[in-house]
Length: 115
Image 1: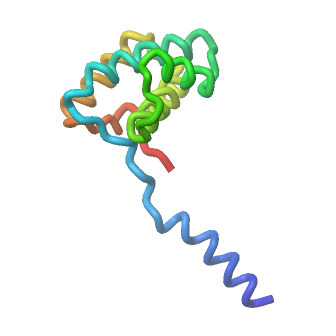
Image 2: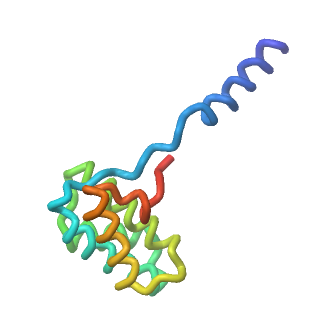
């Protein structure tokens, strides 16, 4: 009994000890492309297209399949576009562009962090 309580306590403590992972980083030369992805992702979110469907649409438009890093970035952009209920598509894309360019590919200011 004591051992199972200790294991349960340890299992609960481990996620608290591990910091949240940062959103994937882009090569700064990719920022214009990801800005375009952000524009479309936010427009899809504004039209109530759910995240999985949005990601599939974006994968077809931008041919992202097969590159895990790019797929991760696109998924992070879609998730952020879905969360940001207040911004128009253009404003969301501009904020992502600024974060990407000024952050040398780091878009955490807009995308947040992944778990």
